Length: 79
Image (cartoon, rainbow, N blue to C red; front, side, top):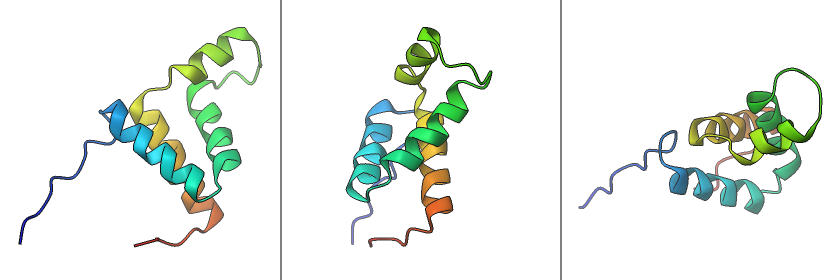
């Protein structure tokens, strides 16, 4: 049998986008957004630079937020 390589989620933006698609499929957008904001902007102030940081989150930040959202919401694997 053939084994496909595991995507490099924390370093590949395309792989991180695939994670975001799964987050949306599972209905976890709110939890994910909350945790992503927490990872990219930690001063507590919401201003225009917060939006920029959010839009330019690294693949690692996106993956960490997704894992936290799944963990906190108690979502089971769809496999």
